[in-house]
Length: 338
Image (cartoon, rainbow, N blue to C red):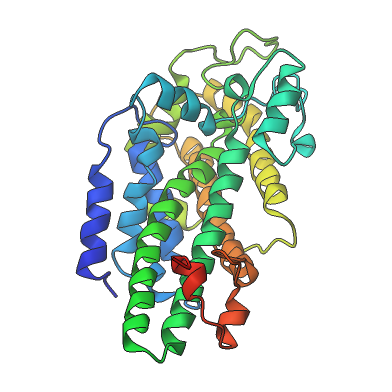
């Protein structure tokens, strides 16, 4: 089912809003594939607007925005660029600071821990917080959408029903935009080079195995090799089955990053075999598996967010979906009392 013309037109405007900047982390081709494929794999019990035929294309394009917005200005870039990576060292610590298990709830507390070892969230990367922040926003977005739908169905006044319906349409645009941008960081986290200090060649660290120190390996691996050698079928056949998690979102994020970091040594071992120098089934299998992991995580975290949204409070005064379904009017909560 295609999106309505107003929603499609508005989203097209968002897509054109930022057209410059570096393209990193799986490249344009890889990010489009990962995020679009995740939308294609959503189950039928999610809202129809998330499964419309043009949504995989829209989410694939929107997933590139965190890269496309680079070089907007020094203030902008200084705040945002470090969202794409996490510098896990060979002892499992973030630049000698906390481990994944020790990550606190907020970026402020995380930054405080890093400053104690002479680092900051900007030098060490804050990818886990970009993922959690975006996911929590998605939960809130879903909650507003669900309440707008319930309010539209319950409204006895046609004018008020139209207002709720219009709010729901606005929510659909925001959800797609927020979901697409957030999906970028989940995909980044599946790339081993975004979860290690060895992010572009081994670097100036003990290197008894003689791993590559080539500057430019990062781009050659995640963009050039992917763009020239990976196709949808290779990724699709490796997407894991849905894996619900009876855990908090930070725990899920930790596990995703840990699984990626576990592949750093295998990645550099494969590079020694020239697995990423051109068409190579061993290199293709490795990359497709990491991209497929991202597809599965995006899909599963969306389902997790949808479930969490049922009891999320929205507006002010606070109201929840069960209250609206029981007959409470969310007019003041959604639009303000004045």
